[in-house]
Length: 329
Image 1 (spheres, one colour):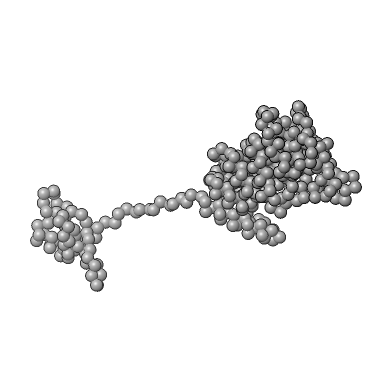
Image 2 (cartoon, one colour):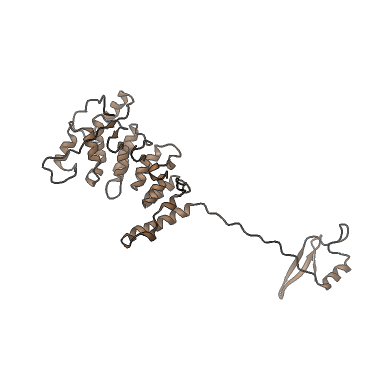
């Protein structure tokens, strides 16, 4: 499917924040838009560019970015570049895509990802800016972005991308706009595991903690019968050069194990011990009182069981009478 009935591009070179009001009014007046998949294109680059990636801080790249003739597919191609110069400017590039009439839920023809999907990737530590990405994600959701859309290539939702790239800020934003229970939405590409499985298998500690705080189920089993704790890589199988990752794996495994319900082993109760045998002297003393052990009801017989009284030299045995008076012997 290709892009059809595209509104005319908005004129001018407004800043990211300056055009939001006009864009919102435009979308409200135009009614609901059918999401489309844009054709695949290459990223536009200056002819005399000395680097192989798009850098919005470079004046030539910025001219291309703000040029109304630069198409939506070309800007999606820019977003696909996994470099800090691009990912830290996801709001700027994404806003230029929207200005050209792209629907908020439209998809990149190569990856089948929406702008919200790209936003969740763009907060990755060491590559993007999580706060910038989270702010733009809120804007996309306010414009009608759907958090439950899945990429048809990976079957991942925005939540799954945020978990995969360890971006708790995006996890919170997406789940705030989602339905109850969506925190445990599964993904077929990860053995029908949840976002918690994805974060655990990628050693994304921040994402794991965030998901647990937001109610993710640590006992949920994927189609292999594995819980999130079971998919954490085994630190013993990691080479020495991955010692840091092994430490993270050990910590993460312990964290997830602590969240599992503890199964208490039943206390084994053996057969009751028989009461201690009475000495001949004790039996004689009971006889003088008219008490027969095990006698028929009606006779004065000892109900209850043996008892004892503590003494300095040990326990003095006795027998408890119906009147709760111990008989010592």
